[in-house]
Amino acid sequence: MILDIGMIVAGLALLVVAGDFLVKGAVNLSLKLGVPALIVGLTVVAFGTSAPELLVSVDAILDGVPDLALGNVVGSNIANILLVLGIPAIIAAVPVARSLMSDFLTMMGATLLFILLAFLGPITWIHGLVLLAGLGLMLWHSYARASAHRRSASEADDLEGVEEGISGLKIAIYLLGGIIGLPVGANLLVAGATDVATALGVSEAVIGLTLVAIGTSLPELATTVAAAFRREAGVAMGNVIGSNIFNLLAIIGIASFFGDMPVPETMLRVDLWVMLASSALLGIFVVTGRSIGRIAGVLLIAAYVAYVVQMF
Image 1 (spheres, one colour):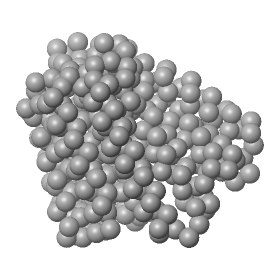
Image 2 (cartoon, helix red, strand yellow):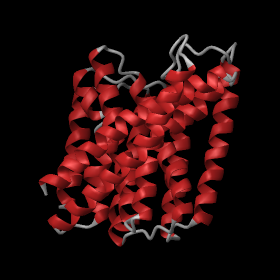
Image 3 (cartoon, helix red, strand yellow):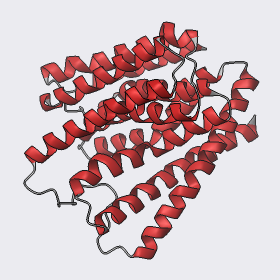
Image 4 (cartoon, one colour):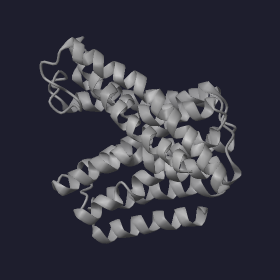
């Protein structure tokens, strides 16, 4: 068990570092090749920050544990809302802009689409095509909206991972580190998580919904907590909504091409509805424009603890 936990910790650490390397390498390479910063932000950064979850899901399917892949995505979406927003809210109120309504509705649409496909499961590459089509529509809409609100698409100041005057060698090192580190980290995490599930006598889906999901949400959590301490927690809501959309449309969509994903009965009965309820809960704050304060943060965390406890 100790060795397995060590593999999980090492895998998560490698995923975080390699994911960061991949984003930095891809962003700086894209800008050097003349790709507009707006396009880079909507595609390269978004996919790069989701690369750890994607690699974990693909590796789980190839290893014959698709339940872990589905659990990772559903659990991450739940943790993103209840933990990634709940914990920073205790430190500093998380502002919620009504301008996020369009993004919130997109997230709800992606969530409902995923639940519908889950009940029509197992999720196959055909379902994956539907999800990827939804992703394409979302990216097109985001591009059109961002273009309308930006005078110049070449500004790269607010892009994650940009380094002025970076050399070609450093870009190559970043890319190589990301490309090598991500699959190795994913393999360590999946292998360790599978062994822990077996040792504890619980399903891979439960481990995916809890241990793996929290682990792959740690980068988002660390970012939002740091932002809360700097009194810049306003970035949290947009990041969570964007991450949840990509988890459902991109990660499941792409992973479905590596193997079918039967949806566990317990997930159909409980977890999908917890994900939907958690997502809908954000609507209260988006519609009213009210910040997520300390009391709301405590309630969100308590709801997550209650959800995890009932699983075990």
